[in-house]
Length: 70
Image: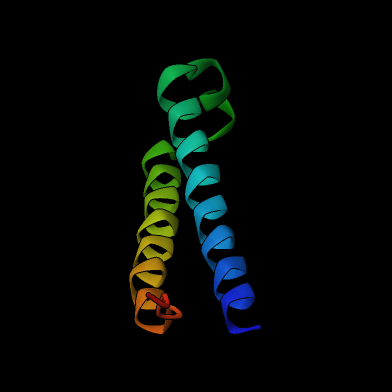
């Protein structure tokens, strides 16, 4: 059960990273959609913060991984 929960959290954090990465790329590569966001730097910073937090959580989660049996 522990491995299932850890796997679910890993996937959750990876999905958060992927979603924020896609948003950042959209802002940077398709400036047409940026006009809806007058403070683009604030939006980019918000997405980068989401990535940083998710990456940090992934790193912390490694401490709780189930050891593999050899």
